[in-house]
Length: 294
Image (cartoon, rainbow, N blue to C red; front, top):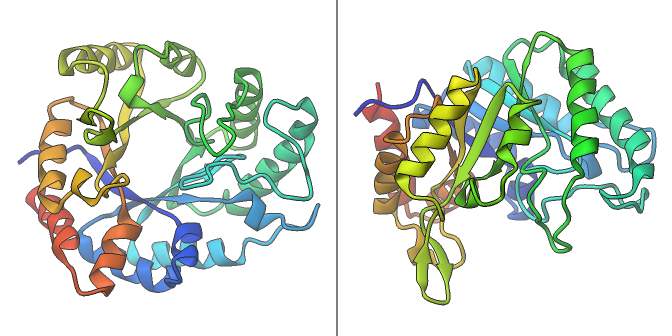
C-alpha cells in the first residue's frame, strides 16, 4: 500500500502527564512504530506559569530525545494546542482570545518559544495554533482571524526559513468557508478528519463527499500549498466502538485516496496506554499500517 510521504502522529506530554504516564518513556517507545515524524505542542499555560518566566525543561528533554531517535518535529505555538481543554491560556492572564489585550503576552510567548527552539534543525515546521478558527474547548472560543494573521507574520519574521502550518476541522471543511482564509497565510493547510463521530443517529464522518474533499485538496495544491491530513482518527471518540483497531486500517485506506501530502494520526497516548494495560491491538494496528508503507 502506498502511503503519504510524511507519516506521523500527534504526541501530547500534557495528556500523558494527566494520565500518569511518563512522556519520556512514551516517546522512547514511539520510534518502535516506524514513525519518523511527530507533532509536539508547546503548552503556554505550562511554559509560562508565572508572568515573564518561561520554563521549557520538559519540552527540551523531548526535543533532545527526538534528535537522538532521528525523529522530525512539527511544533505547535500559540494559545491553542492539541488535546482538551484546547486553549492553554495562563491563569494569571485572565484574558479571552477575543480580547485584544491578550496579544502582547501571546506574542511574547511565541517570540520566546521561536527563539528558544529555532536552532534545533530537526524541528522542521511551525504549526501556528491548533484549529484556530474552529469553536472549541469548554467555552467554544474562536481565535480572531486578525490575531491569527499577526501570529503568522510574527513567526515568519522570527524564522523565515521554516514553513508554517495551519489546520482546521475537516469534517466541515467546505461548509465553514474558512479554508480559503488559511490559504492566504499558511504554507501548509492541515485538514483534521474523523470518519466515525458518535451522534444521535449513529456514527457520522465528514459532511463533504469524498469527491468534494478530493476537489478541495486538489484546488489547494493548485494554489501552491501543501495539504496534510493533520489528524486522522485513530482512537475512540466517546464510545470505544467509534474506533476499534480494524477501523484504523479502514480510516487509513480511506484517507489515502484523498491524495494528501502527509498523514498524521491522532491517538498515540491512547494506543500506548492500552499497550501498558496489556492490550496491544491498537498499537499493532498502527505498527502494521506504518510498516506496510515501507
